[in-house]
Amino acid sequence: MLYKIVSKLFLWIGAVCIVVISGCSTDQEIDRNPETTSLKLRFSHSWDAQQVSKDDFNSLKYTNAHQEEMSIELLRYLISNVSLENEEGEVITIEDYHLIDLQDDSSLMYRSADSIPIGTYKNLRFTFGFDNDDNRSGVYADLNTALWNVPEMMGGGYHYMQLEGKFLDSTQTETGYQFHAIRAVDNSSDNPVFEDTFFKVSLGRVTIDKSSELQIDMNIAEWFKNPNEWNLNDLHSMLMPNFDAQVMMYENGKDVFKLKSD
Amino acid sequence: MIKIQGFIREFRFVVWVLLLAACSNDEPTSVLDDETYQPTPVELNIPAFFKSSIIDPVIPISNPLTEEGIVLGKKLFFDPVLSVDHSISCADCHMPHSAFTDTNVLSEGVNGALGSRNAMPLFNLAWNFDELFFWDGSASSLENQVFHPVPDSSEMANTWEKVVSDLESDSEYPDLFFAAFAEEGIDSLKVAKAIAQFERTLISGSSKFDKYLANEVELTDEEQNGLAVFLDETRGDCFHCHGNPNNPLWTDNIFHNNGLDSSFADLGLGKITGDPADNGKFKTPSLRNLAFTAPYMHDGRFSTLEEVIDHYSEGLQNSATIDPLMKKVADGGVRLTDKDKANLKAFLLTLSDEDFVNDPSFR
Image 1: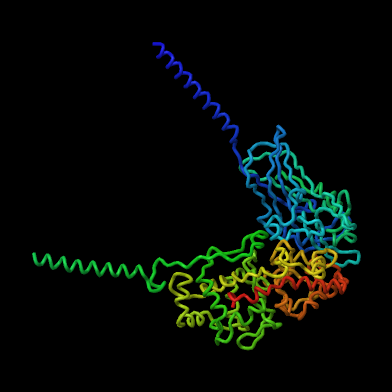
Image 2: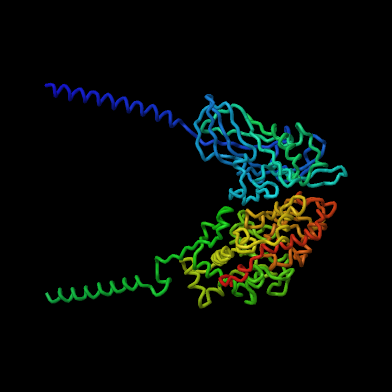
């Protein structure tokens, strides 16, 4: 009789444990596997209120803050390490990079390989260019293929941006400009001096769902406007090894990107 | 009973005959007899540095590389059968010892007529990722490229009907085409595919500079300074179009107006796209094998590397479509010193690949 009672007791304890364990397990699975999606960012471009696409290239249709008429013939730039910060302050960082080239429509959309939980985040950020850990010479085959490298004599690593075109100089001659952004380096002495010119772009609150794609707009005019009014007559060529010009680009780049709601 | 035994004997005979026939099908005398035959897949022999530094080459799914396809393509490339009077082959204007170009300003076709542009050298073509070939990008793949010279009156001046007819009546080609494509028949697309397969095997990756990167040889001081001129944005600034030591191609395979003329007798890319913004733009050639590929530029106007360097240093001509990367155009260029010019030439010659032009498998 005692044996039967003890046996039933163990059976009841076992059954309760199974129910409890399976219940816990179900709750944890829900926590670990919320609904996810890939992050989709679409990059658009403007000159203040005007939209810019490759169809607008090769024409002196823009006027910069210094009142120089200018055209665009090439615009490529690199973003990396897109991150999302949730309401609890936890940050999801997507260790990745993406080269945008206005001549290549497919590059205007970035789709993360990693999935992220859908929901609302209090900040979307990315790095313009590469931070110093990622800016390692020659390690990215696709960027090497795109000739995106910076020669070792200028610090190595990769370009952050190549913006090229023509402007009407003070003699009314169409003159080429090469507005190339890299990590600033002063090579005037035997010991090069570097200054970081990549920067974090913070775009604020976003909601991610399965169908949404976020649109990020670069206002190209901002590169020439604030806080440094850019004078292309003085600064149009050979800007990569120009330390001060690189720092000025860095300063002007801070207000270039905005999240668009439509 | 006797009739039944006779029927059984006849039945056994028929079975033996059928079995023998089946056995003979299992052991074909040639690939033509083998219904299961498939050509042998091969992989490109890609230099290690290419594999590690740039993305994979373009091999179309519709034209995978095979041993038999490459053999056929090589034979076709060197065979004058593609020309109307069987007088010239692809190799007459694309000679192995000249890195698969020739030494003429403009090449001569079967009827003595001259082409309109300098013959381009052929190597590392599988890494032309946009797959736009020729100086003006008018051929949209390596296969499509083959369709241009055969009917061109200033090149082979032939018709595809005659090409196919000549190949079909040849004693070797029908079997070679079957071996390459596992089906009967010869047509222009198979000719193009085979030649494209052979051309993809033309890989140049063994220059002095490649060996320098592999720590097998040293560069001289002059060559080192030439590299510095090449990479210096205030001097040569050659790297934005021609690449850098992290990319073994030494070209961006893109189209630029490099300031040769202030007006254009040849519109280049602009004639193909119809966009005036493309007028005067031509494909950036690779800087590999310059020792073997003179004369230079799309029209072969420069016979020496000194003339090429002088052009970029002080000979630039302004025009509406000149590339923004051409600097100090009003001064004719960046005006390199004589020492920098000589050193730049010394560096450029380190990109020439004796092993490639002497490779017996490309002859």
